[in-house]
Length: 233
Image 1 (tube, helix red, strand yellow):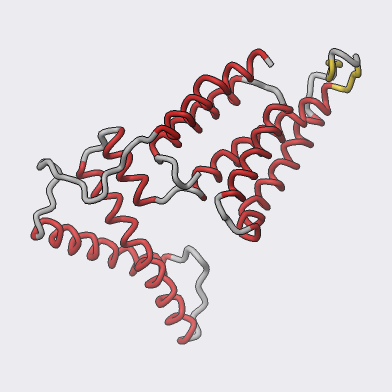
Image 2 (cartoon, helix red, strand yellow):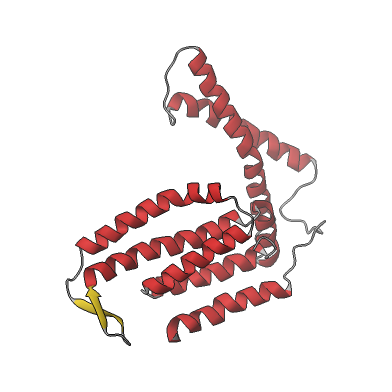
């Protein structure tokens, strides 16, 4: 999944999301969620990190299950047409809501944990024709973010050294951070303009972002094969 073009990956997973939003099949949702987790693990994402990200999702899915279980129409619906096994619509409704949470979260984590953010902006600029000024702005913002986190920790440590208690989103912490962020952005803008960065001139790419055959294959699976299978299987 890491080798896929981010623009193609985004388009394919977005198509899968639209299909899941249209279909209300808990079996399909569970299959997509399990497949997403397997693909994430195959991309060498640490199991500990995945469990940390999925913990609030599982908690939210359990809450959605009981919400759908206690607030349903109350009629019966079949689970399997071949065996003619019936279950209450309360259980089916709760399972549908919980499985949708797992499926959407799995797709989101699959994209977020297997996509390089720099390559994502570059692919959007190349394949989706994102204006250069927006691409430069996103790259600059992601470059400033680590400095913002470091400055936040320094400011909080300074308050603790003076015995002043502050909570996580205290204005005393966010105020200096906001001022320094504006100063950093102005300095970065001046530096980029002085080095010839412009949003209007055409430029060549040192490492071009291309669409390969496996990217088209992935798009075909997500846009053609998956919707057909979801409707007719």
